Image (cartoon, rainbow, N blue to C red; front, top):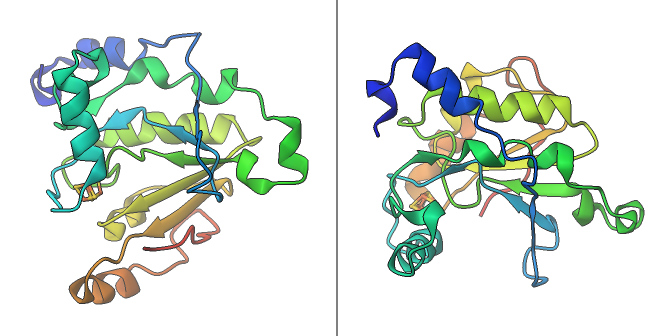
Length: 188
Ligand code: SF4
């Protein structure tokens, strides 16, 4: 079902569809030491990068019949996961290793892509504000859209620079953004 075809009531119902058992996904490898958790309340992307590992995973998941990947890599809200920041417990290891407090948010999407409905982004940011015990790391290839939102201090914003042509775009969207400290989560 396309988001833009839903009525206001249907959209509200979709956003309220929370799973109390939702949890962050723990990174089982040490490849991303700066964030030991991932959280994907929004999935899918339309940038169509040739090197995209997330798209490969989504297509594999669809082929295996995984419910979350039934639309493969088309942009989709996974509202059932919105409770995860409140239900996942910060581990004791976080006092020595900041990575255990950091959540790579929407690692299977570009959550600030032009196509992402504002309501999806606001729903995620509401959970970020409500859960200051975590740091939420965002990366996007469209950082200009950061300027449309208010961010709390536990939202760490970054942009991905994978080509010379994106440098000017990244530089023009440099912090401070309105309403937030605009800490940079990095680029790559
Ligand atoms: S921006 Fe990221 S998620 Fe989107 S296609 Fe490119 S690599 Fe994949």
